[in-house]
Amino acid sequence: MADCLFCKIAAGDIPSNKLFEDDQLLAFYDIDPQAPVHFLVIPKRHIDSAAVLTEDDAALLGHIYAVIAQLAARLGIAENGYRVVTNVGADGGQSVKHLHFHVLAGRSLAWPPG
Ligand code: AMP
Ligand code: ZN
Image (tube, rainbow, N blue to C red; front, side):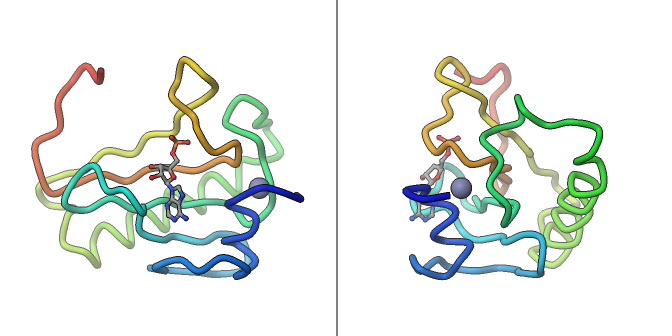
């Protein structure tokens, strides 16, 4: 999608600090980390947010969570735990309108979030 930051990152037009890539998704470190480990997982295909997901996206979402689990094991954060979150819309705190999953770890995370 034109003028979408994460579409440009997925296409390689804007550089990112990549952790993992395949035909469906890309995982890269967040540019403004909110925890000692903070990376994002995005589908390469443009999806506005979790608000427009349908049953047809089930396989993609399963793949995203499987890759997150593999990356968590690789990065050594699986044992102590981590948080996966996707912000939706203005009140959800979504600033980039391309579906993305934050993975945060490396410290005890507060709940409820601010
Ligand atoms: P959200 O506020 O949930 O939409 O999350 C967007 C995230 O994208 C924020 O945590 C930003 O720090 C991150 N971000 C913005 N631009 C970049 C970039 N060029 N590379 C990596 N992460 C970015
Ligand atoms: Zn996009």
